[in-house]
Image (cartoon, rainbow, N blue to C red; front, side, top):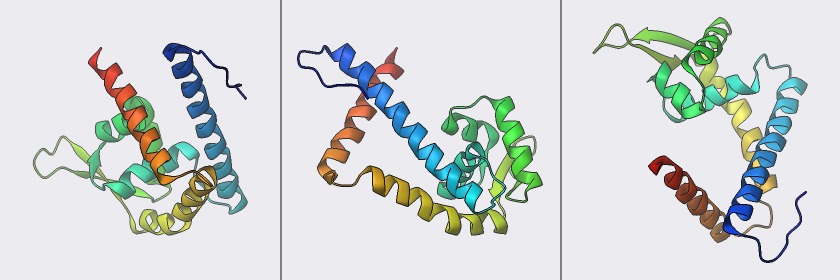
Length: 153
């Protein structure tokens, strides 16, 4: 773990923050992957990320899902093909543009949320134990501002 030293520059602190965010992601990923494996669910963490996007907003197109999961379109095709094989999602033609395919959850995909969502809530509950809501809100605001700064470039 990175030690806290006084008199660090903003750049040094931003690097440390980015490292710790990656470490948090790695720990949450391992936690969820272990739960999935222990319960014999035929799903990868990457597929779960796609499912999470669709649980929040069903009926997105492939590019929107790729953008939200920070993946390229070709790797998204692979993930969606595998989710279709597992009967978790289906592709349907967009009524406004039949060339555009929208991705929808199936009944199986919706049911899986009931199993997986509590595990995700559990790991983030553990991660945020003894942290004030105000501190979490400040963290969200801070990261949002940093992302906004980079989007300006």
